[in-house]
Image (cartoon, rainbow, N blue to C red; front, top):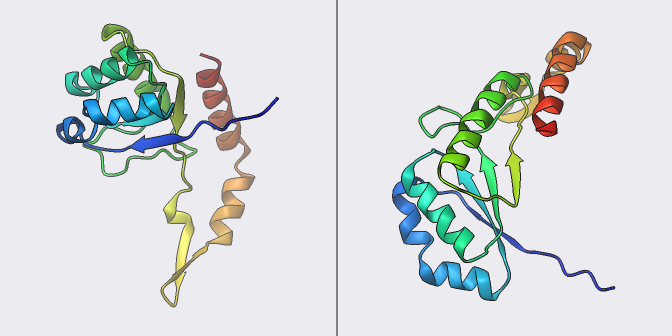
Length: 154
């Protein structure tokens, strides 16, 4: 049996720019080339929902890349953001149901805390003291692990 990888394009645009980038020609290309689209969920707007419905009608598999709301200063999540991820997922789930959206998968971007990095001669390095404190904080790790496991179980 031959394995054929599925190429996935990533679309990370504000809602106002989606129409320019996810037009009929782009959707037709995704269909003909049998591509999947990973769409950054920057907002839960009617415009974004309409584009997802158009992709669903064309049977393009869409991966929801769940980011923080576009108005927040950072878009990705940290390991300690379990509550924020769960809250955002609940909003996303309600929006998806309300708008009849189908998803092939859900993606989360979880980045390390940049406060753990220190700069030496302009180059970032890991602050080992902060890293050791974080690793030794078993409650923090266990709590975040439990929150993410509960979310993934949904």
